[in-house]
Image (tube, rainbow, N blue to C red):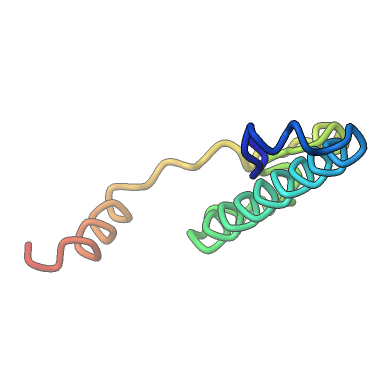
Length: 96
């Protein structure tokens, strides 16, 4: 619970508790932004955005402002052709 023990709650003021709560909320938001950043760049490096690039806000909206971002067709992942599927299979299964 926000990095404090229940026994410590008796010894802090409401102001100190509010500071701890705000700091915890900021840390959680920072961790979500870092996870979104990593997921977005994994998505980009997989080559799915070459034809229809999207912004990180469109990829995984975290705030109300992100939800207002214009949508693109990039959320529709294209189907692989049989030749592409074969190349991918060979890449990940070199023994076969």
